[in-house]
Amino acid sequence: MIKTIFEKDLTNKKMFISREFVGTVEEVWQAWTDSEILDQWWAPKPWKAITKKMDFREGGTWLYCMQGPEGERHWAKANYKKIKAPESLEVIDAFCDENGNENPDLPNMHWRTSFKPSTNGTIVEISITFASQEALEQIVEMGFQEGFTAAHENLDQYLEVNRGIGYKV
Amino acid sequence: MRRDVFQAIADPTRRAILTLIALHAMTPNAVAEHFDSSRQAVSKHIKILMECELLKQEQSGREIYYHFNPKKMKEVSDWLKPFQQMWEDRFSQLDRVLKNRKTKK
Image (cartoon, rainbow over all chains, first blue to last red; front, side, top):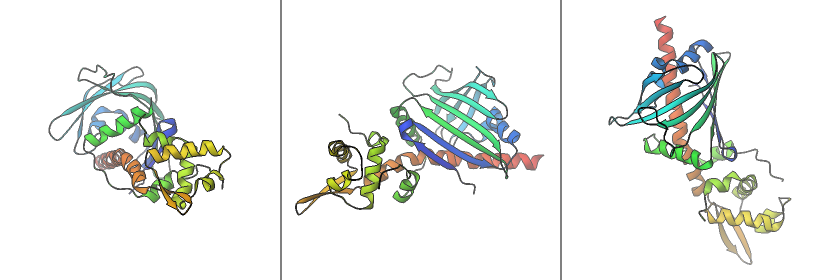
């Protein structure tokens, strides 16, 4: 299994995710930017991503929902800010209703995704920035509600991730 | 005022204090010796960490020792776990999608 690198920088309200995929940069880029392919993988099981509308250009949007096992739907919208095919994407992700009207009570996320060729395929790096600490907490709490399984991580690993914080010894 | 664990660990000095005390229990003076900041500033940080239960205090003779509370810290790491899991699920699905597209060609 290919390892996902997952880092969080709570001070700067950022998350950083990095992962290598087997496939050319063009193939991986297409998987991230073609709604038909996105629908096949974007939602974590048992949820399903369903695209209502995609207008893939700067200033355009991708309106989609995540459909749960009971048929419940959560709508989201990706606003494409910058597109540099097939290298990088900048997106503002917002929660909305089925007509794309954004919900001001739920936090936006700013995503920057880059695609780089590697020895085995393509490395995708995602950096997600939240407007506030509360926004970050809110997003993760929503993750709980949608029933993603929580496995247990031990304390050693936690400290491993957070080491190098530079105290004087 | 609500004492928020995430706010507590967002501060680099408090993270450093936690890492120190996680190694072994310490007196307030021993903690303060590791930092350039004033004793007063350090004890303020300790107070915040106590209030959100990341530290526990125990009396041993005349000295007070601060202990690390791993249970509370685990809550912090568990909190992010579902988010991480979501990405892992998503990515293994993308692996399959990419693999299928290759075989179709």
